[in-house]
Figure (cartoon, rainbow, N blue to C red):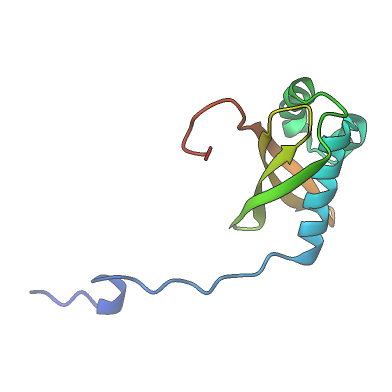
Length: 128
């Protein structure tokens, strides 16, 4: 068998990278976005979005009725390079739970929404 160099890199299970912690200011921004979604303050939410995410946030605004949701839960977070995905569920007494996923990334020193997706009412690999 030819020599493949550093065998730890080519054979068998690979070591996993150490888990990185979620920055506290990101969690604060994620909670702020969820507060705005639950309260229906879509004007303030649009101010946190990049131009590419504006259309997706408009779709979320049409799907969420203001005042129906009073609490939320962050289900999962994931990091991809310097952007973080947040999957969360909004709960209310008069409405079915609403699942949303959005991506936050820094732009000019503050966390901005780069994309947002409604995961409610469908069955995909992203819903659970």
